Length: 452
Image 1: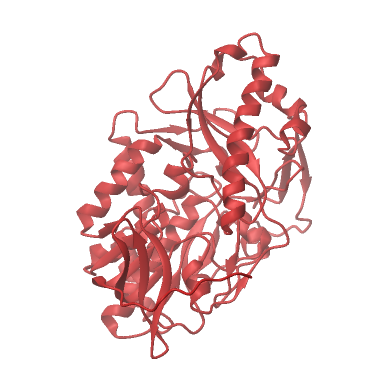
Image 2: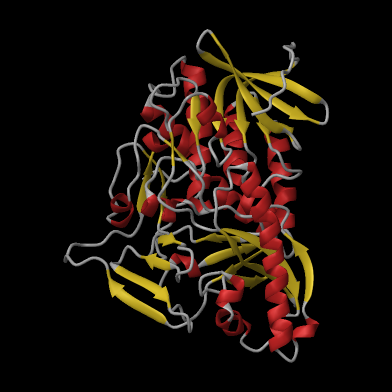
């Protein structure tokens, strides 16, 4: 291997804060805002030019139900609900979709559809109103450890290489970069769920059964017999938001991420070519936009103080240290196979290549089934590092649990919890492992979260 040696140099400290959040997805933003509203001095670092992560920059423009699976009991509130209300107040910023006939009987089809560009603006406003210091177009580079303790993070942007000192750190990078760099154990599931390139297309509504056409060309597209999903952009009559193109690989690695971005865009073009060839109105299709970044479902996980399991999810196990709740089903995208949804009511449903719904019972006992599941604090808590918390899709979970946890309405709650827990540790003089949990839960409740 050929190497070069970089000379040692002093790095300027550009900010000294109480808490620094790495990663500006909604999960990261909500962590920063919750801590700042409590009174902490907070900085947030995001590599893209806008906050919002997968929701805004990957065009995944759907948040699922805030209720349990009966649609009667609200179990999610906090900044997720606040953002929904903010976007509802913006003309064409949000619409609620609850189909009259729900063949899946799932929270997946009770959803909030938002305009991703309006969300970017509202996230900016939320951050600035809370007094958080934002760093956009800024990439985390390395930790700075002094006397065995994490003291700062090294960042790079247009102004060069610099450091941000902090007392507490929140890894919301999704791929767990900070946690891995400070020695947390990294592990992978046996396979990766595919990443998806988002697109906006005009003219979709003029086509006749376009998803059936795409299914018949599954080998040409290599998307495993499913046509993904599409939904109309709020406030438009003929622009559809596509999340269809798929790529399988470890997108936490730079070369694979590059390959996935290029392959995803090429697959969008190929889908449009197929539709243009096969539908009389296909030539009226127009590509309006491609997502600035591919939407990643899964890369690697960080070993925390507890691993959430599929059984925890499916049987709705309760935790004394619960920090969030959700009713989304276990939704594992398997390459070259139809996506399977495993629901809390004991049914497992998947779509056939022809688009029909098949059902089997995964649960054979007669026990009462739960209506939602819980996320324990231990799943975002490193076992030993006293001033670090993780949140987002890298939290500790097995393959099945990750299939349910990875959706944004659940991950948003891990961010809020991390922000409040870091503040609790900061003001009490304790570590993130030894915070007063009753005090923490009260701060969560006072800040708008539902605590059951």
